[in-house]
Length: 251
Image: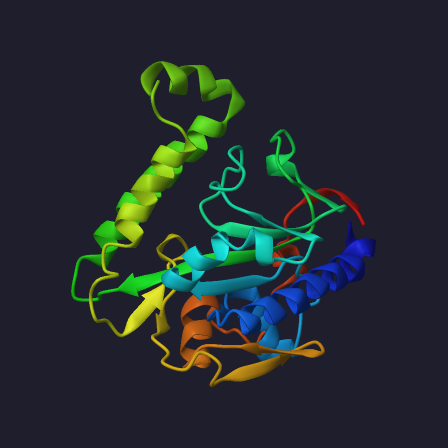
């Protein structure tokens, strides 16, 4: 797949450009997160070997966005467990219709396998409450769900959890993730990734170049990148440059 990285990135950049237009038209807030934020800061675009784009949206905007398929360009599909019942992840993806971008871990799933951009919900985080306990609840739930997806354990899963399905697990995620959303807090984030950001009043106040586009980024970028990646300006050894193990790609 190495020879296709530029094609993959260009396709994802095309999705991003369309999404930014939708976000602007519908006044939806977002920021770059994870590797996309690092790429914008360190490379002014993609990390050279990166094969996805990561965005985060405040929960209110995220929930609005999930219901906007009719407002999307015809070539894009909002993929979420509420829009595709066999989709096995908690966060959403926006997929490019007519393309193939199959990850090895999901090759047996009957889902849309197009090139994608990831979109994560960002929830309020009250640091005065037991955040570590919430992490553990989410991780336990996530581990149980992942185990249920392993083919050789499905029979045991269905015997011991006959009434559980993906939506019931994700309802548990929702309950824990959104438990601080009625509070006034100074942090927002995606608990499953242990990501924290300062709450932003004006989400477009800070921007960085990402290839030929400008994207919204959070306050205190350096603090976040150091927390998440350590010495973030140093390129990792080639053996540590992780990708998504794509086994099929076509446009």
